[in-house]
Amino acid sequence: MKRLLACLLSLILFLPYLAFAEDDAIPASFKFGADVSTVLSEENSGVVYRNRDGEPTDLFVLLKEAGWDTVRVRVWNDPFDEDGRGYGGGNCGVANAVEIARRCKEAGLSLIVDFHYSDFWADPAKQMSPKAWVTMDLTQKCSALYAFTVDALTQIAATGVDIWMVQVGNEINGGMAGEWSTNGRNQLMNAGSAAVRATLPDALVAVHFTNVSQSDAKKYIREVCEGDTPVDFDVMAYSYYSYWHGSLENLSELMADVRETFGKDVFIAETAYPFTTNNLDTHPNSVPNKWCDMKQDISRDGQAADFRETVETAVQAYALGVCYWEPAWIPVPGNSWEEQSKLWEQFGSGWASSYAGGYDPQDAGAWFGGCAWENQALFEVDGTPAWTLSLPNILRGE
Image (cartoon, rainbow, N blue to C red; front, side):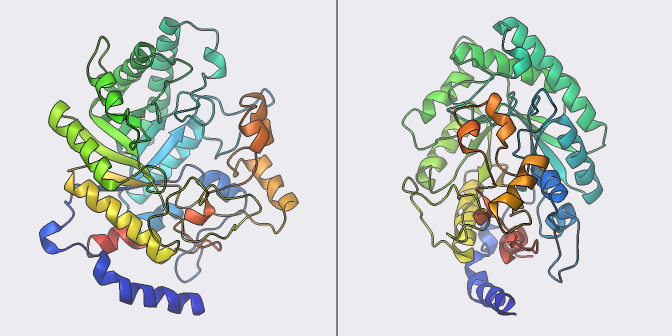
C-alpha cells in the first residue's frame, strides 16, 4: 500500500512536468523501444511479470499497453561453450531472437534486430570474433557474416513479425568481429547491410556507435560515410547514457551533423537511468560508480526526468525514436549468492556465467555473476510495473 501511495503521489506531482506541450507533441511516427533480450532467461529462472493488480501477465502485453512500439533484441552467433552451456546475458542466440520475435508478433510490437557479430558482448573495447570465424581472413569473414545474417533474419522473419530495423554491429567505435581497422570494419558492415537488403528490403539498416562525448565522435561519422569504403546504411544509432556520455547538447549536435551533412536518420538505440542505489540481487550494480556523472536524482522521478529529457532531445533532433535498455532485467528468485548463481549459471540470466570465461577470460572469466542492471529496470523486484514503465503513454499525453 505504501508503494502504491508513493507511486500515485509521484504521478500527481510529476505528471504535469512530464507531458509534452501540444506545440511540441511527439510525432506519431516516433518509436519508443525496449530492449528485453534477457526475458526468456529471466522467465526460465522463475521471474514472473505481473500487471498492476499482481496478476501474471505476458511481458510483451505489458509493454504494448504501456505505449512501447518496438522491441530490440541482440543476437550473438554462438553464445555457448563446447558442452552447450550458455554464456549468460540472456544466452542471446538466434533461437532466442526467434522466440522473442514470435511474442512481439502476438503482442503487436515491431522488432529491432541487433547483430553483435560476436559470441558474447560487443562494445567499443571488446569486439571479439565469433569462435567459428577466428581463423578466417577478412574476405572469408565477410562471406560468413553475410550468410549468418541472411540465415538469422530468414528464421526471425518467418514468425511474421514486422522487422523495423536491423543493426549491423553493436557499439562499433573501434572495430567489429575481431577486425580493428576502419577498412575491415566497414567491409564487414557492408556485408551485413547487403544481407539485410537482400532478405528484408523494407527494413532500415543501422550502424551503432557510443561514447558520443569523446572528441573523436564526429570522426566515426565520417569513417562510415566517407573514405575508401563508405557503408551503405540508413540510420546512425547511438547509445546515450547521461551518466557516461556527456551532455544532451553534445548529442544533439552530433545528430544534427548526421542529418544535415550526410542525410542519414538518427536513433537512440540505448538509454537507461537508475531509480535506486540499492543492490537488489547478490551481484554488484554497474551504476552508480565513481566514473558516473549522475545528472538527476536516483529515484523513480529522476529516472523519469532523465528519460523525458532524452526523448525531448531526440524529438527536437528529428530522431526516429529512443530505446530503453533492459527495462525488465530484474533479480531472479533467491536470497543468497548460492541460490541465485545456480539460476544465472543454468539459465543465463546473469550478465555472464562462468562458462563464458573460456571465450572471454579477462572480463567474463573474472567478473561473471548476476544482473548488475536491476536498479535501472522499469519493473519492481516482484515483477509488477513501476509507474515509469508507462512513460511512453505519459509523454504522449495518453
